[in-house]
Length: 105
Image (tube, helix red, strand yellow):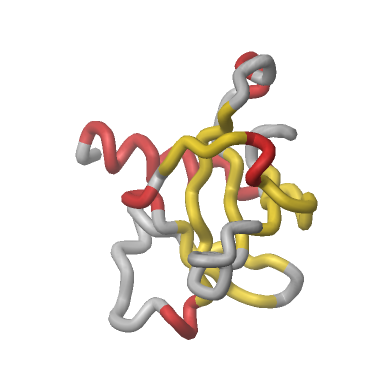
């Protein structure tokens, strides 16, 4: 598992709303049993406009998803499904969203 990679959400209770999980945990912490993830929601399910600095819109396989940074969670790495893609190219947007939720700037 690696930082900024997107994985399938295997949780049956949430997989329709959040089909993917964005791994944001540093690769230096690979020995931990858990990973810190941000759920990704299809823009079609998001409702009203999101705060784009907090919730950047990311493209995965030609579809757009909102990173719900305010719903950041730690989950057991065994609960993470198949790797879908790498969003390292969106690193600055993702880090900016994390900075915004922590510091407000």
